[in-house]
Image (spheres, one colour):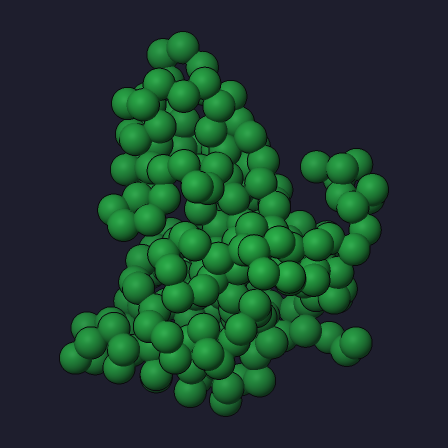
Length: 218
């Protein structure tokens, strides 16, 4: 099986990156190791988090490339150079083009702050997702970890965790609770399962090869 090398792609503060760093410190990444943090902009706080944890940080800045495609190609080159096995998108704010999916089929994980297929796709990012959930009046929201394919938020779902919406919630309070109760729990868990070769993808369905354990952990 061997140790899997993980790259975390970030654009901002890196709260989900921190959850992964903390999980690695507790030896909860299934033998995977965060080998690189790659930011789409220089000066992102996520790079400081990486530095504090002793993880190499790199910048592949969107502004240095004429298009998303040119940036994607540069990212793939960097990932291959670093011998990366798993790519994790943690608050990465740019659309990656097909070259990334072609290079890493069923090996790119993204965390989305809603229960896909609700409140996802074009325009559904950051605080907007929670605004949409509150405006619609749903009683439960949550987070989803999925594999990335060509369709925005459309790849096979690995894990989901629901979070109750409370009276008086604002987009900000809901965002925080979804992060704490769902994102920070299921993202490290999904990474761990991947690194242990416990995820098997068949079409849209992701089979978890130790589902009894899964229920206990979540």
